[in-house]
Amino acid sequence: MMKADKRFAVFMVLPALAVMLIMTVYPMASTIYYSFTDFRLLRRNISFTGLKNYASLLSNEYFLASVWNTVKFSLLAVTFEVVLGFLTALYVNSLKSLRLQKVLRTVILLPYLLPTVTAALSWRMMLSPNYGIVNQFLAPMGLPVHNWFRDIHTAFAMLVVIDVWQNMPFVFLMVYAALQSIPQEQYKAARIDGAGTIAQVWYITLPNLRTALMLCTLLRTIDTFRIFDKVNLLTGGGPAGSTTTITQYIYNSGIKSLKFGMGSACAIIMTGLVLVLSALYVRDIMNQRSI
Image (cartoon, rainbow, N blue to C red):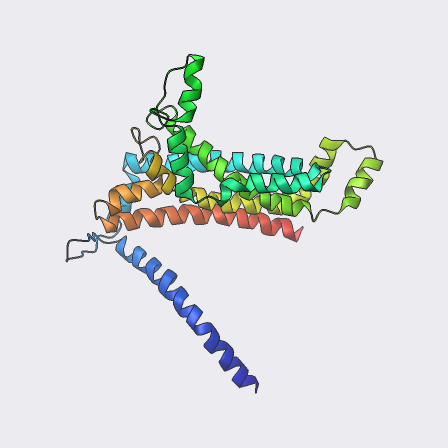
C-alpha cells in the first residue's frame, strides 16, 4: 500500500517537474552554452569562442556603465521603497480608527495593482512637455516647460521616482502585516518603563521587523536589477546612455542586433550579480533566525 502511495505521489509530481525542467533548466542551460559561442539568429554556423564574449563585455565601457546604472538604480529605489514603506506602515498601524486604516490601505495599494506598462504610460503622459499636467501646473509659476525623460539631469531620477511610487506599497503591505504579529505586551512594558515612541520603535519594532525588512529588501533588489519595461518605454536607455540598465543593454546589443551569444553572456553576468546579492541577504536572514 505504501509503495502504491509513493508511486501515485511521484506520478502527480512528474508533470509539474517536467514543466519546471522545460521552462527553467533548459533555457538556463541553453543561455550558458550560447554565452560561450558567437551565436547569431540569422547565421547557421555557431562557433565556440570560450570567454571572448565575457572579456568583450568586461572591457566595454557602455556595458560597465549599464552595470553601474543598474546598481545605482537598485540602491536608490530599494532604499526609498523600504524606508517609505516602513514609515507608512507605522503611520497607518498607529491610527485608532480601523475604518480609516482600511481606506488608507486600499488607497496606498492602488499603484502596486497597476500593470507596469500602464503606470509607465500614465507617467509619460503626465510628464509630457506638450500636454503633461505637471508642466501645465509649473508653467503659471514661471517655470519653463521641461522634457523630463530627455534631460540627462532628470531622466534617471524620474525612473527612480516612478519605481518608488509603484512598488513602495509592496513594502508597506509586507511591513504592515508583520506589525500585526508583534506582541502588544512588549509595548505596554516599554511604556510602563517610560520609553517614548522613538525608543519603542528602535528597541521593539525594528528588531521584530528585521526579517520582514530583509525579505522586502531582497525581493525588491532582485526586481529592480531586472527592470526593463519602464526604461524601455520611457527613455529607451537615453539620454546619452544615462538610464541604460543591464536588461536594456541586453535588449539593445543582444536581441535587437540578433547577437544572442553576446546577449547570453550579459544575462549570465547579471544573474551572477543577483545571486551574489541574494546570497548575502539570505545569509543575514538565516543568521537572524538562528539568534
